[in-house]
Structures are given as C-alpha cells and as structure tokens.
Amino acid sequence: MRRLRARLPFLLLPALALVAGASGAAEPGPVGLSVVGDEAWVAFADRVLRVDLSWSSPPAVAATATGPDAKMKWVSTCEGCPGVVFVVQVDGATAIRWTARDGSGSPVELVAPDAGAHWKSVALGDGGARAWAADVKGDRVLELRIDPATGARLGDRRLAGIEAPYAVTWLGPEGLLVTTHDDRLRWLDLEGATRADWHLAAACHYESENHGPLRRALRDPTSGDLFALNHRSVLRIALDARREAIARCAVVAGDPGEAGFVDACGAEARFSHPHDLALVPDGSALLVSDTDDDVLRRVSLAPGDAGCVSTIPLHDVPPPASARSCGELGWPTRSPFDRDPGRCAGPPGDDACGEPVAWEEAQRRCEALGARLCTHFELAADEARGSGCASDDDWVWSATRCERVSPTGRYRWDTGAIAQAGASTGLFARPPTCRASGRARVRCCADAR
Image (tube, rainbow, N blue to C red; front, side):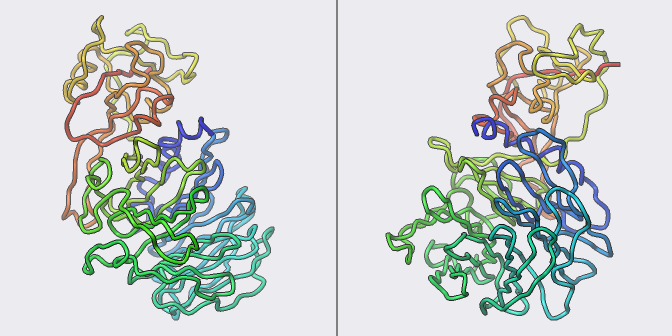
C-alpha cells in the first residue's frame, strides 16, 4: 500500500492522456471518478478509462460513447464487482450502461434514453447485483437489479422520491448517501427510508447564494466521517455518536464561495468547477475531478499535510526534441530505475548542482546544454531518478505547463509550470503542484537519436 501512496499522484496520467482532444465531446475535462482497489475509473469526454494503479498493465479504454455530442457523465464500480456502470449523454438524452471490468464483451444498456428522465449519477454495489441511479428530472432514486456476470437488467423499483437528486453513493449495508441540487444530504437505508436529512449550507455555515449543486458525499470507512464536495470546496463532516446529527463540519480545502485554480493548503486552495470526489484506498488522500481546468486535483489527508491540494496534469505534451542527443551528452539511456531507450536525463551542467532557480532559468540551463527540461511524466516515470544532485526527493521543475482557462475563456488562473519530486519515490511528499512563481531544482532530459 505504501507503493500505491507514493505513486498515485501520477499514475492516472498516461490513461487520461489518451483522451486529449477526444472528438465530439463537449465536456472540457474529467467528470466522473471511481477508485476501487488498485484501479481508477475516469469518465472523461466520450470515454471511460481504466487505469491500473499498480502499473502492472497499461491503461485501457473500457467504454466509448458514440453519437452526436456524446459524453460520459458518471462512472461507478465497487469492490468485488465484475462490472462498471456509467451514465452517458448522447444527443441531449441520458442513458445508463454496464460494461465488464475486464474489457470483454460490449456495453449493455441498462436504462435507455428517455425524454422523461435525466440521469445525473449511478452507484454500483452489492457485488454488482444492484445499482442506484439519480433522476434529477423525475425527482427519484431508482434501484436496478443486475446480473453481475452479464450486466443484464433483472428488474427495478423506485426506491425513494427526492427532489432534484444529484449523486448517489453506496455505503454497503448501511444504505446510500444522496446529494441534491439544493445542498441537501440525505442518508437512506436500502429500503428507501430516510435515516437523516441535512442541509449542508446551514450546517457548514456557507452563504445561501453559494448553494449547490452538492456534488458528491462519501464516507471514510476508518473514521466514519463523511466527505462532501460542493461546487467550490471539500468538506469534512463528523457525525454524533448515534450518527444521526452533524457534530462538526469543516472545510478541508477550498472556499465555498470563491472559484479559482490555486494549489495551496486549506482555505487558501481554490477549485474551479469540481465535479466528483473519490477516496484513495489507504485513506491518505482524496481525488477531485476539476472539470473546467481539465485536471484532477489531489487533496492530502496525511497528518501534517492535511488539506494541501496539488495537481495531476491530464496532458503532458512532449516538448521539441533536444538539440543534442543522449550520446552527444554522454548520458545513459538505461538505468536501474528506467529502461526506456528513447530518453535520458542528467544534471544541469554545474559541478555543485546549484541552488533552486526560477522556471525560466531552469529552462535556460537545460537548453544551454543542448538538452531540455524533463516533462512531468518523465520525472514521475523515474527517467531522472538517481541522475545526481540528490534531487529524487526534492522539488524539481518540469516542462509541463499548467495554464487553466474556463470553458468560456472568461477566467484564467495561476498560469505556470508543474514542480514535483524528481522521482516517484518522493511524489507522496512533493506531488505535482502548479506554480506561477518560486524556485525548484533542475533536471534536464534529452532524446536518443
């Protein structure tokens, strides 16, 4: 599990890079997110992607939506479930589909597009035998019975009537958490009866004009606390001893009333348009899909670092080829940590390794050698690990830019570049972070020719 903690901030990147520029999709970035065991499932543009977080196999496209303006809206799986369910929008209508986790077969349609319904989310549970879907237009939560092996729909029932439900989260035998467009959080048992009903804006003391939609709520199985994502911040909610009332509500990261893009800690951090929330298996962090910014944001829950937000870039466009080759620079293309023969890495050229510098200076130093700054992924993939200057666990500049612009182009936040640890071993302590200024060390990369 320690290996997963160290590598999680960057392992999503290669799969998500597959969808850069996906055609026909109006969503600007990732929407749905589900993490189970060592796998992450991401609804991004017109695809659902499966990422093996242990990196024992390459990322794979699990499902693709086709049709006018096709886009994925939500995705869910569960521990021990052989399938994945997702909401897809095609030509303005939403449907619910199932696909096998192992990639076999074709997607099965559980709920066909219907003008009388608008499905916002779906949650899979009970070993894959049941799913629950929120119909925001029909003011209901529908329970679907499914054949876990084939995805065939066996039946359904209206579980509960709820005004404008947004997201459903399965809690196991204890029921469901349902968030709504008016910032209500409902706890239902599996028969649809309400166990608790909380108004989050009132309980967490944020202004009424900043009401919802409340995006997603989930539970930390270790502490029993709830985490909730509203449209600007991540909240932590402690319940009373009987789990019937909110005993305490605190903002983990972000500001409930202010948008932006800032990697910082606690109330100083900013989210643009956060859409979904997932807890990593060991409980060390939350992942947030930030749709406007085309990124995932990582919120640390580790002691001493709780509430600190960093960035997982979704695109890592390779820079132009280095002016000099690896052979000309005398840098090996293979190491005990990286066996990619197409790239190499080395120090910026001064014997003393130098002090941390600004990004522009880091770029200049590498170019002066005939090399280039390493990209975010090259650093995360251990291309520069063990290449000198004790930079594996220190802050190092990457070539990956992090300009964030809203879909309308109206807002622009915190342009800069990604700084992170120089190798995967340090990423848990120094994950990819967007910096508009400041200083970091220099690693240079080059290409074999």
